Image 1 (cartoon, chains in turn brown, red):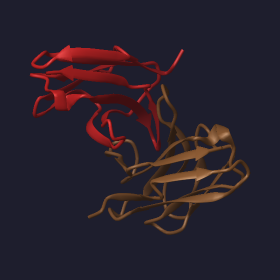
Image 2 (image 1 turned 30 degrees about the vertical axis):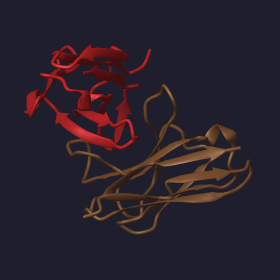
Image 3 (image 1 turned 135 degrees about the vertical axis):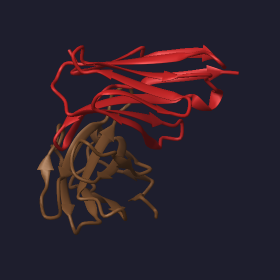
Length: 113
Length: 107
């Protein structure tokens, strides 16, 4: 099992460019999450998907869109990147709700110039 | 005031010392998670607690629901324990994250 995979690992964008971060999990989990992590701050939830076909906003959704393509894949799109979106992005998944462990991908380090 | 507070923010100790990291929260929760983030960035779940105490190897996690407080203990600490330890609390689908405690164990 690969667990949770993310691509790319690193990306540099110019302001205004768009890109999609890909995430896939092979554990048959229902719930998937996108977080960003900034220096000195805790993880902040951008969007989550409780199950295939549903998505909901988290704490910091502005400037992002998501797609739950199928049960395995959950992508995060930046339509017009801004320097404030420079961060490390983590995808995670878990089965069900709070009582289950959350599994994380390796992260994508994004720099917006 | 943050809903999840961790202390200390930074901790440096000598190899072999007993380590305690604290987490206090102000919201009602279903479960509390402890995670470890390695210097390379990867995040690994250590414990998920809803009551009492759990032990895994040299790691022990406790939670007091009435006091809204949890502790993570590391016995016989080792340089490979150096990492950021993160507390997160949650109910339903979302977790609220602490800012993390950066632990450095010196040989």
